[in-house]
Length: 242
Ligand code: ADP
Image (cartoon, rainbow, N blue to C red; front, side, top):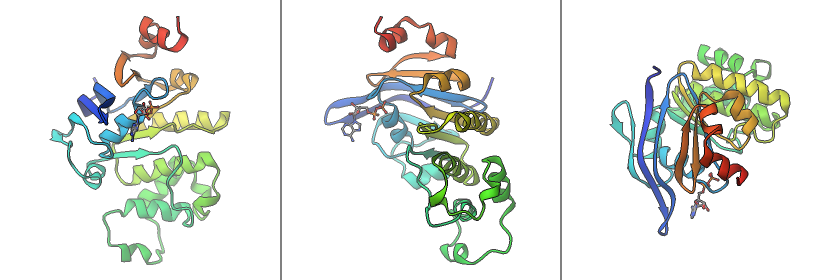
């Protein structure tokens, strides 16, 4: 069995008494691409916000035996939990290589990052290959295609040594080929990490999910393999209204 890297128990997030996330349990395992799906407003993004320290919650999130509830965002990131956003947050005026170099040196002195480097660290070179941007090392991130920015953002988590990656709709706005490439990338990086993907696209989910959790009205409606959740009567009712 793949080992569990992140455990969420009974997570609740309330906004003025409205429970956006209502008692969710979730386990993210190394080796798996775990899809979080559900209709708009189901609580997917809020759950990710809770895990990454952006939203206050009750319940428990643990990694390596450490309780993360109440911990600050940088601490949670240093524990190896990284996320991407629907609109990639990269440094637009810096090159692909510089973006990765900065992410790799997140703990280093800012002055050392300003020095011009003769050689990029091996980790940055390997990551550029991995995310398919080796030919764009010197390209400003601001002029990358939408999909390439998403890959760069994922690369920044990889060089920062995240082993739990939470990706918010990574294929939004991508064409067919870019989606295929992203699917392969997700499996490649999940080989030795846990990857969770918030997604609307059911075809992409069916093609790439190792495991699926369906959220509805803040709670887990169903969880399991693609086959298990697709044949679940409650899931069919929510998605097809049958
Ligand atoms: P999803 O990502 O599944 O579309 P969200 O997590 O964005 O759903 O939202 C879940 C529910 O919580 C929605 O009803 C949304 O309107 C509400 N919500 C999200 N963020 C806030 C907030 N900051 N303040 C009040 N309500 C919020």
